[in-house]
Image 1 (spheres, one colour):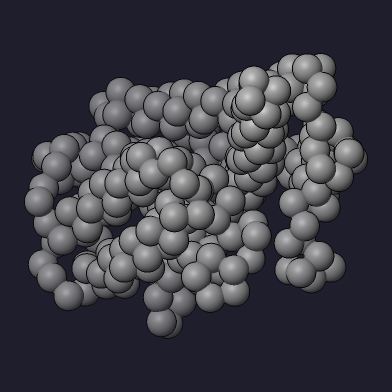
Image 2 (spheres, rainbow over the protein chains, first blue to last red):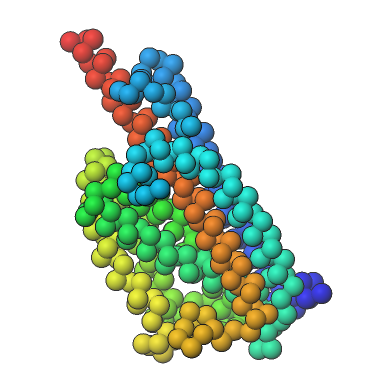
Length: 62
Length: 246
């Protein structure tokens, strides 16, 4: 099993993988939070009577 | 399905909403396979286990340039074809490209310390990638600084096309100048020089990270379209309240 034998440079290897995982997770979370935020703002505007010129719901993604 | 069909933001939203779960699933599966293969790959006879950093460093480095390439095509879409989604695509790609470039720089640095004896060297490859990262940050700042989105789109498109000059400099920097960085070992005339034991996990990880980019890019484009709808409705709201008070 090579996976368990990282040798004397294990901290560099483990740090690299953890860093990539953490940064990608933050990127995914940021995009997901942004999506929810935009949908919430559109719902609030539509609830306040604001409609698109087409009359379709701005949050209808189907 | 043509680019013209996708020019309609509503149609794009519908398509991306249906495609995203499948893309995310495929990305997760390929990442799991790639990580397993990376963990099981043998040690390199010179680099030992540090070769495992290659499986995450190289896909991020490739994507750092690929994303700028995507933004360059989008820039042409803005300036030449005036495609309605071109500047949406360019704006959404910039933070993702900056992230991949940051990860390429940091993982390269963490690989360089045990192999070269230094985290950083001001040589052509490292410096040109750092410039790419700074250009990404500049583009993000430009999008945020200019209120009028169509003006920001044109300025960003020009900056993106000018910045594309850096891509061949990055690619060929290891051939044109003396550098600590190794020359190309996969994308080269004459085929890859990497052993299959390293090449296959690397290619799986590269495809997985590319799918990750496509997934995140579609999701970020969807967010940007919704953000523009929010802005349009807010402007209508302001105009209505202005008429009422007049």
